Every structure is written in structure tokens, then in C-alpha cells.
Length: 629
Image (cartoon, rainbow, N blue to C red; front, side, top):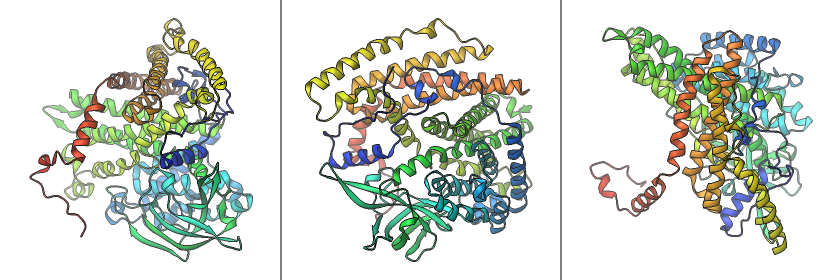
């Protein structure tokens, strides 16, 4: 299907409320609207399987690998000597000694270019380090990730002036910590509701920031923060348009108050809280890019920033594999190790094959980020979504494998003479990965918008506000011409004739990915025709379709990675890929089936009745949480 790559989608907001239209316009203006490079993930939703983008699987340059090997080893020595992860969980404090030791070997400047005093690591080597840290201590992994992936170093590296880079980036070599302040108490993913303001003084030299920021990881100890705030609005087409801008703010500036340190289920060592800004003065030269470009900075930063979540999730899954292998092979019940019982065997195989798939997705997306000739906005979101969801599943299965010991704290196990496997702590630490850097729900909506971009682009002239009859007629004819050839090709295509055979036992799974990409593209298009502008409200439908896309992406990546590992001497990688693909196929077919269930209608009816207090009888017999006051 052909369309101009440099054309921007125009969405008709005439039937939307002013509030909804404002939110949509702000987000649309901030998102990357042009696809300058190919995307394997995006192609799947158009029924195209661009195998050349993932085959052969990329490998690290030997010299580059040695750099990563050395740093991962150094990090391991530091963690073993200075950081007791269970003590961090108990005391909610990451020791100063550990922070200083990590800073000394460059962990707080890993992605900063060497010319500014950093290590200048590739995304692959950076993620190797994050994977290792996360396998040991979730709190420390989140601290390092929030500081470097979305904190001051990344946006400055991507968008800062040369003067800003020279002024700020060398500071992190010495261990300065940074944070990213976007979320507010009443604002999550809807930027139009942002309340924090940055008001320029009459002299035009400084801004005064006022407002509150919530869940600002590292914010309580940060030396520098990237703060998102609303600057003076613009009037566009007679309407006031909110302008969100980004500022570098020095930690503990006059007017900054830490109002509360949050305490969480897991990652309890992070310094995360509610921060108040009251007339906090920031120089104009400490604004990143121009006014109104803050959300663009945030979204672009998150594209690569969220790649640390797959790495951390995979590190935790690898630790789960290590623990279940050791425990499952040693714990004997009814005459044989529990891992050799059918349930235990299935569980261990699932953990191993899922970990292998997560690793494949992590490395492919990381290599793509380094290469720079692939648009990774969808790959990064898919990697985050897939790995965080799979890590939680692996973690849950690990707890079940350990039984009561999986529910018991490591300190308690140690006190009574058993190996202190930190299963319970890791379960709590793992859960946050489905929330931070974009929740699972938000990732599904993000992927939905990006996957529909081609269709919206083709239809943009037809739905353009104010277009005359002749323009709409011509646009409709052009649209019909495009889909008259495209849609039938999603039903009958070469994948039914030309079979992929180069991967031996994995060929049938690669063929399945190719065929299913056509099916996915066809079903997505059909859902568009059925629901039209209301498709955005069908979040369950879109969630199933986006998850199918993620599963296909992971299957294809895993097959490619398996061939790579066999070439490196790990012959049994094929078995892991085979097992993962069989299970993934079952999940995909389940998601397709779920599209036709009436769950949405029944859920809506029940929800309406619940909110109208018609089910309060079901709440009888408990002690409700009292209202404030």
C-alpha cells in the first residue's frame, strides 16, 4: 500500500468535546508524525512481514562485547560488596557506599558520550548492565534507569544545546542523580490536564514554576530534574492551545518542598514522592528546546527510555530460571524432584522458554536503537509491553514452584537455615514493570494509534475538516482504489503458496507469523469499518489486537534469535523457541476468539449498575475504608 511518508494525519475533532479535542491535539502535535525509517512492528499491522529487518539476528561487535563484559563484571563485584538487596527492601535505603561505588565505575554516566565525560555505552551494553542490576536489586535498577533513561542525561543528549551538554552532562560522571517530573496528583496520561505552570518574568530572563509533581522517581534526592510545565498558551484558529515546556531544575532549589515520600509494594528503596514547586526560579537558558515542545521531548525520550524495562524484566526472569532450576531439581516430593512432575516440568519449561523470548525481544530492540536506521517507537513499546507482562507471569509461576517458601521472606528463610531465595521480594519488585514508563493499558493505546497511522493517513483527505464535495469525492475514489487491491491480498496471498523453510523445525512458526500478520491486518481494518470513530472506545478490542501484534513480533524475533544462538553453539535454543512458539500460538488464537465474545456489553451493563449502587448487597459483611473526615 502506497502513501506519502511525510504527510501528517489530520483528525477530525469537530464532534469531540473541547476537553477531549484539546487533549488529542496536544498529543498529536507532540507525537512523531513521519515514518522516516521502516518498522518491522508497524508492518505487521499492515499484513507485511519484513523479515529482512530481523533476519539475520544482529550480534555485538567483539570489541564492543568486551566493554560490556568488563562493566557487567565490575558492577557484579560492587553489588556483592556493598549492597544487600533484602536490607534495601527492609530499610528503604540504598547505601551511600553502593551509590558512590557505582558512580566510581561510571554507572551514572553510562549513556553519556565520552566527550562529556561519560562511558558512551551502546544501548545493548547499557541494557546488559541494567539486566544484571535488576537481577540483584529492583530498587537500584529503577534508580539507575530513571536517572539515565528518562532523567536529565537522555533529553539533554537528544535535544540540548551544546552549551547545555557541556554544562550538565559532565556532572553525572561524579555521581550526580537526576529525575523526570511529569505526572501530577490529578494528571496521569492526559497532558491537557497539566496544572504546573512556568511563568516568564517581565525581563524575559527567568521562569517561575508553580505546581506539584507526583511519583517523581529520584526526585527526593535528585541533583537535577527535568520538569514539565505549562508556559503561556498560544491562540491557534481562534482557540487557546496549551503549551507544555521542559526545564532543567536544580534539586532542592528555593521554593521546592518535598511534601511526601511514597512507600510502595515493591522497589521500596527508591526515593519517589510528591514535590511542590512554589515560585521556583529557572533561567531561560535552562529550558530544553522551545516553548511548547516539552511533550515532544518526553515522548521521544520514552521511546528509548522504556527499553530498560524489557532489560530489567529479563534480568528478573533469568534470576527466576536460576532459582527454579536449583530448587526444582533439589526439592523431592513423592520420590522425585518437583521439576520432574508434569506440573513442575511444564512450569520450568515455560519459565525457560519465556525468558528466552524476552531476551530475544530485549536484544533485538536494543540493537535496533543502536543501529538507528529503523523506527523503533512501536518496537520499544512492544518490547516493554511483552516483557513486563511475561515477567509477571514468570514471577508468578516461580512463586508457585517454591510454594510456601516463595511466600516467605528471604530473611526468614535465612534465619531458619535455608537458602535465602528472594522470591517474595522479587514478586513485589516485578509488579511495577507493568506500570512504569507507560502502563500496559497506555502501551496498548499507543500501539493502536501508531498501527492505525497508515489507514488514517490514507483517509486524511476524506475526513479533513472543511473539505469540499469534490475533494472528498476524489479522496474516496483514491481510498477505494487502494483498498480494492490491498484487502483481498490479506485473504489470499503468497504466504499460502511460498513457504518459509530456511529455519528447519521453526519454519512452521515463521510461516504462522507471516499468515497471521495478514489476518491481524484484515481484522484490524474490519474493526475500523465496523466501529469507525468509536473504535478508540473499544479498548478491549484494541488491547486484544495489539497483544496479538506483540506476540507475533516476539515469536518472529525468538525464531531469529534461536538461529543466532545455534550458530554460537547453543544448539538447544531451538527447543526453547519451539516451546515458546507453541504456547504463543495458543495465546494468539485465544485473543482472536475473544474479539467475538459479548464480554464488553455485559461488563458495561454490570458496571453501570455497580456505579448506581445496585450491587451494594454484594459488599455486605466487610468493614469498608471510612471516608476522610
